[in-house]
Length: 107
Length: 120
Image 1 (cartoon, each protein chain N blue to C red):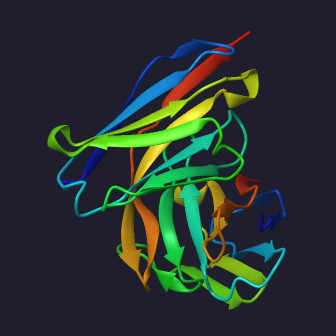
Image 2 (image 1 turned 60 degrees about the vertical axis):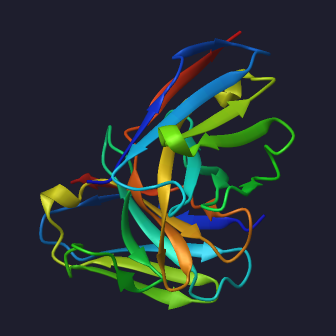
């Protein structure tokens, strides 16, 4: 299976920070990567599909980039409501596989 | 509006079979696929399998020998059955809808999830 490795596993941030998190695929997945946000006690929410396309209604402070094996999710001007776990997912190979997540916490 | 809701037992004994139902509203199962995803407490997400809109299914190879997904389109329900449960099957089980963008499906709508605990 394609392994998706996310780093860091957690980040301590402040409101207003620019946040960058990474996802590395164990093989080339093209741009077939999603990013999901999961707040405590909630279901995941789709943020980014196709590595860089914002889903409907997602604020433009969320930006996805990358291709091949290396992907990045950036949150510019971090808001308190963005505190959550973030997961990447590859859908180039079956089975679809998620990364282990990056948790954003307040400093 | 689009809704998905999982239901089933909260506690299952090890070695027994888990049966879950995903009841959907706001769309037809003949127009959209439904996927099952699970999440062990405090851990990451696992794609389990999909009921395609045409009634076909695909499963995660790691679970394929134990898992079956079926549906009743007249009741707008998708069913998950998984046998030979072990304690590491304890998880929140989600159903999600397959929404197409860029030629692939994505998980745009999710149920609230249902926590299933497997007891030894």
